[in-house]
View 1 (cartoon, rainbow, N blue to C red):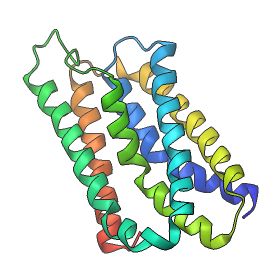
View 2 (cartoon, rainbow, N blue to C red):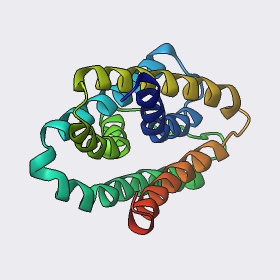
View 3 (cartoon, helix red, strand yellow):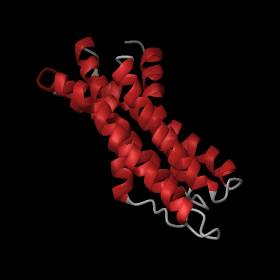
View 4 (cartoon, rainbow, N blue to C red):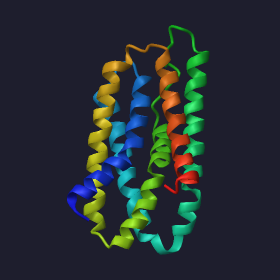
Length: 189
């Protein structure tokens, strides 16, 4: 696999994590470097670790991963997105997304949900007999860059949305979950 192909693969894998980063950022009034690092590092680490796990577990778990990855991602993202929408609708006008809290637990669930596809990619990388450490390093770096860019863009435009930011963010998460589910169920992706 060439570097160009690997970067394109990494960009594709990072899109869900970037969208979730946007969603999170829309609910944080003042983004700090701490928020950027928390999100970008967590997503980058999981986007890198999951292919490694998939790579080494390729022979044992390939069928299980492919059968359930879309269900897990769908359920987690719909629950998180639905919760964000509900909290935004029921919040007072002055609170906007104040009920949103960027916790380690939330980021962990989001990172797992958005990186399950990367687990399956690891299985594919095993079949291609690539240098897995090099590959996951590129995937992690690209994910970090994409998430950071997404957060900065969301921060720039998110304040314009006010209370609707949480609704938009929640809809993004639900949309990602539905996309993953439909893609796997109907298009073999």
